[in-house]
Length: 88
View: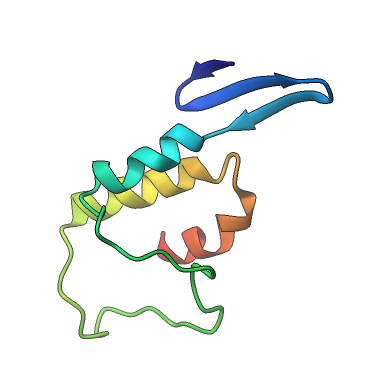
């Protein structure tokens, strides 16, 4: 299939399928997170994020780029909209 802006267009007997498979596979490399563990549920629905959580401070530009990449990913993965919305 053809690819445009990280979105693959695949023609199937049932119609057209959009995929961001290669985009997804590239994200851990792009953000230096190749050693991170994956989990089934991306985020707890009751989680409250705040500045005083005790975690290390994050570089704002890096965080914005990461969240922006995740927002772009929701084009083909609307199931990730809730956790990505919380992070943004």
